[in-house]
Image (cartoon, rainbow over all chains, first blue to last red; front, side):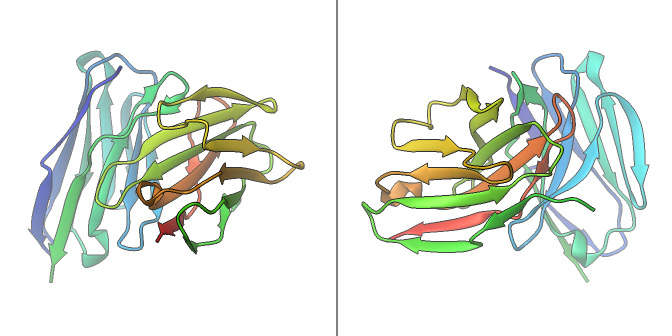
Length: 107
Length: 112
C-alpha cells in the first residue's frame, strides 16, 4: 500500500513565525487532503489539493504530484494553529493518513 | 454549511457490551466511511459504504464490526462485543465520490 511520511514530527513555534510542513508519499495520487486536528480532537478540512497551489488566509498548500510531495505553509502563526496536521492521499477510494506533524505555537 | 454530525460525542461502555455509533452524513453525498484513531496515533480507515453495501474494509474491520444505513439519513457503526482495545475516537466521513471528504466531530469511545 501507499506510504506517507510527514515531517517534521514535532514543531514548536513562537507566535508570528512561519513554518512549512512536508508530506511525502510513495505512489502517484490524484488527490490529497490536509487536515488540522484541534486540541478537542476534531478533524478540520484545510485543503483538497490534487495538484498546484491553493491559499486560504494565512495557510497555503502546494502539491507536486509528479514528485510525490505536498507542502503546507503556515504564515504568521497563532496559538490557535496548535494541534496536529495530517496529510491524507487516497488509497483505493479511501484516505490514508500520515502520522502527522504536531505543532505547538507559544505566545 | 452542510456538515457531518455524529452522536454521541462521548460514550463509555463496559467490556463485552454492544455499542452503536451514529452518523448523519451530508445529505447529497453517496459514499460513507468510518475511521478510527487510537489515542496519540494516526487516523486509520475502517470501512467504506456505497449503494447500501460495504465497498471496502480494512483488516481492523473484523466480524465484531458492522455498518448499516437504516434509513435515508443515518449511517451507523456497531461493535458487537467491545474490547478494551476498541477504545478510540471514531470518525464518520462522507463525500460525493473521489472528491473531498468531510469528517464529523468524532465519537470518543471508552471501554472499561
